[in-house]
Image (cartoon, rainbow, N blue to C red; front, side, top):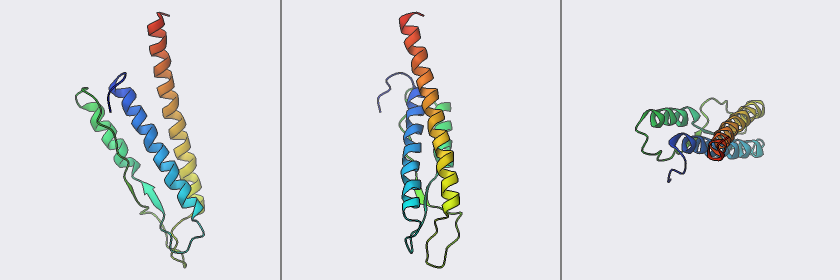
Length: 122
């Protein structure tokens, strides 16, 4: 991805995309809570954040983009019907992901507002 403003803004955009992917995965899990044999999926957010930290510590020549890894959720119990979706855990994860998404969006908006003010000379 071409850097429009700075690597930090690009990194924030990548993290926002990762939370969007995670939201889709969690929504899919919730939609399949009663599907026999359905295996709950998760986005490896720890890996995404580790990649983000590594990239932000590296040279500022640009951020190549973060790819969230979707994998089976390792912290699940298998029900009698083979389904591994725990409704309560999925709802907590969805709420947590929403907080992350909104927080990252707010940080990016604040950065854009600062740039706008700098351009206008305010």
